[in-house]
Amino acid sequence: MKWCPFFQGQVSLAVQNKVDDISTSGFSVTVPDKESLLIPGLIISQMTLQLPGMLSNLSCAAQVIYRFKQKKDLTKYGFYILDMPLHDQRRLFDAVSKVADPHVNMTGKVNMDSLWELFFDSGFIYPDKYGIISPYTKALKATYRKLYEDGQDIFTHITYQDQGQVYAHMSMVKAYENSWIIHHLAARPMRGVRTGLKTLIHFVNYIDCLYRLPVSSKKMRYNFCYYRPENNFSDYYFGGIYRTLKRRELCSMDLFGYMSMSIESGTRRLPDDWSIERFSKDDLILMRDYYNGLGGGMMLDAFALESRASENDELSGKISGAPVNNNHNNIVSMYDKIGLKRESKVFSIRQNGRIKAALIVDGSDMGVNMPELLNSIKVIVIDHTLPWSLLRDSISIVDKAYDSSTIMVLIFPFNYLEQQGVECKKKYNFWIINTNLEGNDKDVVKEHVQIAKRKFITEKFIKELSMYRLKRLLAKIENKK
Image (tube, rainbow, N blue to C red; front, side, top):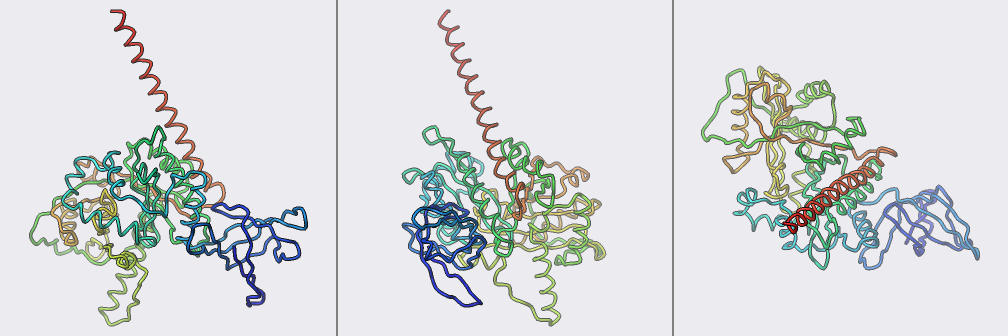
């Protein structure tokens, strides 16, 4: 460990010490009393950690939180990590986790062939899905290599591996500027080990590290996922966190209808009093009023609608001759850096200039998200008198971003479809958590995975035991005949 104390804005000297022990949140060092410059409460803003086997150091800021006197004029000091770059934190988590469980892999190489085998063996890629993606297998594998090898700013993953074979996988990808989607949980047994739950536990421990970062350093303000309400485990875990926290500013959940929509070719026009225009800040104000009337939450922020409205207003300014600020840190630029596609455009459906619904037109390379939820249109309706036929026509007009005659559409609120008499067989809960959690709220996220583990493993064990006993009973009956 190397660190530089600061006095009156000047670096006085660099100090190097051996680390006694280390975790994902801190470490300790033992220092001779005559050499010590440390006191509890001291904040060191520039520090580097050198871990065995790593070619480059990890940088961080840390604070001395305790001092314990040792023998022979030695003193042990404990440090709490205050801040750390996202990629360095990932490497620290990987190194520390491997000590407890060598199967955990976060920053090492992933056998892509084994990963694809896992997706098929676990049923994550089912026959109907494979029928859709099979013509694009080569492109899909190229996309995954870019994410795993070059995507450290927009992608993170945990795999559970043994001798190069992948037995479980979970990942997050940056979906919008401050939002990451949790997805692609797939698992298969490894000599009786429940790899899926183990991977989820390690994943929850990792995001706990992220949540401890100060707001100024967060590259991940919101985590979200989509899940089917009938998925018992997802509803017990994600839905359980939502029902336990009971504060939509910390964890919100909204129900979407999900359907495929066939787009008819040809030019379509809306009635004269209707229009499709760029989503604006004025539209966002009306949408917030509507959403808050439903109970509020974080959906509009997770979708980065404020960023899209600002970009659209700047484009309008460019047309009128006003200067436009180029943003090299928007979601499009982040993906473009590693040669991947990511687009997010937002349009308003208006009647006589007043917004009735917003269309979030998301585009990405196929497979960045397997259910193609980042390659779809999200519809947020704020006036339920909007005719379904007009909404369909509007979707057909903006679907030019997709090279397909069929497009996936998610529609909120779900009861709009019911009121319009539209049949929608699939529903998705859109679950979001604010990473700025504190104290007990963070514990809810960590503890709930243990509760889910006990519940589902116990229930599965009881079912397996019952089936075993039933088979034995039937065998005895058969032998007596």
